[in-house]
Length: 293
Image (spheres, rainbow, N blue to C red):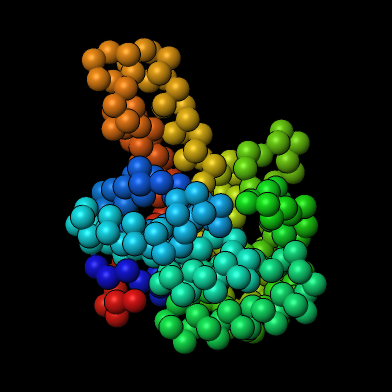
């Protein structure tokens, strides 16, 4: 299966009232775990790199090549998207040039008119190359690679203008945050989600998916959310499994210190987390006949 952009699979999810899991990768183990989970569940997957993770791994071209080569070496047959998560204007252009299949331009921290103008530019540049685009209105709470959001609700009129730029799907703040949710979190604002879904024709994206109660995510999916972003949940699963391996002293038995053995429990935990989440967001197998990108 060639790598594909996200537009068709997210549109299919929107029409079918389910969601595509978009999982951030942080290294080779993360990439293999996500792809193995997608192949096991026979579902399409969006693999994302944040700006920070891409820098850590060696840049957008390296990340694209690594994911592409891993898809080939593992014999992956399900649709795979390589997506830039929360990209600045310059990062979005760099990811497009590197051959990503999908990019997010996050201009929420800019004056709205500048966000709108730059979103139009990124849409034109990306669509000319068959690349899908995600934009954002209303900030997502918490912090992601230095981009800090207070979690305000997306303005419906601004969302309509961003949608009119031709974006393929849209992240909109509805009370969700990045990272772990505090005990006093008030939950998703379904009234605003309903307003957004009624006002814009494009699928919506729920960022900060890790930690939102399952029933709230499932309700959001019935109201237009078609892409669910997950990162923290996999990080926590990896941390827990790796800690248990070391605290059990397994790294000190034989060649248990071998990185391939040391990282395996965490890698397996990421795959298990992927498969669990994929099960309850309703991600379905999809057959595409896309052109290679």
